[in-house]
Length: 393
Image (cartoon, rainbow, N blue to C red; front, top):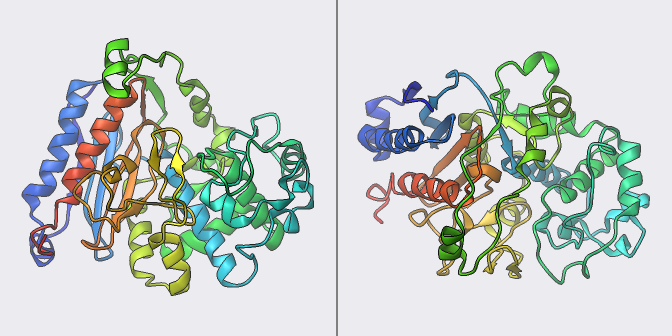
């Protein structure tokens, strides 16, 4: 546990004033994060706020170097989806086409009907299909493993989060249609044009020294706390965090598990979301950005929380129903907000109404998921309120 603020960078007072944001409010966000670290058990966090294409706040707190990077976990999913969007725009991929049209190995066990759209929306029907370290090192072995996968339900009939399986399919689609490594393609299609050199999927061993090691921290919640939050007793003593520690391994970081193992600073994540707002580099058509960032195409309930999924082609849309805050963006940003969080408390979203994008990254996988969720909501609420006066809310 540390009480040190490693680094804080703020935009100029004049720039903040022009956007209707105060330095006091931004520093209040830092203070809230610092209180969380002081209370324990998180080792470090990094936060960033951007607006109008510019970083307004970047801060690293705790036991970490100011310039360090963090494993994003599922916060990398929108970047991979954004690469797919470019291939849809160029007619290289067809949203309504079956995956097996491009990957013949996929046409087994009823999967020949699964479409690209269903994979992007987590309605494809194979949420827990296995793709572990024995199979994930090369394309041929990955495709062989996919041929063995079976469906849990009829594609399109149900939503369930495909934590890693769907994005392995997206990676193979990218490799097949471009005949190019998916990590290189992501960089060339999305990250390099925007100018995000420190946001990476697949980090060579000689560039890993600035990545903070992930660690499991804290204690699991008591049965009483579980029942108070969920309404019934449940054993959360084994949350499966141990497998996530594999993402500390140099070889796994170099591989770049496509739905779970991106690496970045919080600042680069917020700038990615700014690009989704402005499309200043003209990477996507207006229709594609609407489908990717604004249009909720999935109304099925999420079985993990009983809330309508509100999934676009790769992102979560906050929405304006009473359950909207439970989708990971807090209660103060607008219903049009979109983003994608990651395991262990990673948060990333953008609010088109205020123009604010926010990211919170950390390297402590809290064994108490309720505490991690409360911290993320609190930070999102503060970030979402930053420009409410400026935009007349």
